[in-house]
Length: 122
Image (cartoon, rainbow, N blue to C red; front, side, top):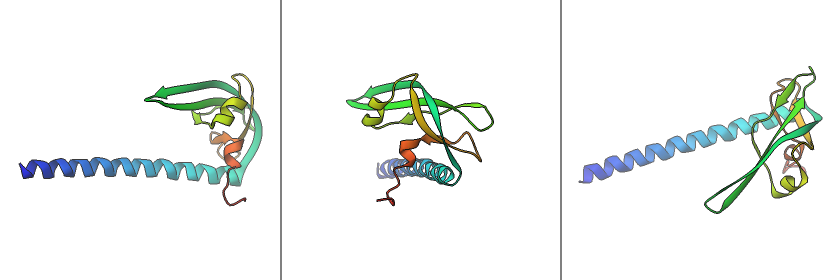
């Protein structure tokens, strides 16, 4: 019986560890993209192409997708971007949105207001 409990605890610790590693990997990726945008960012006006809210277990998440045209004339589409309630209210589907994308790697982009949230600029 104790062996089963120990095996169960080991599996639990292993699964939690994998979750922590994956979460850390995502956070590092976002940090790298933010650094890329700070170094090589170019501001353009994009267009909101999708605006959605999801509700699960009493929590509401709001996100948008946008497209923009890079310096080569290619239209790029963003992944889902979770937005604040203020940003949600400020944008409409089909409407404009300020976007910053990397001139070096044009597929990397973010809504401009997110790149302006640098805590060191207080």
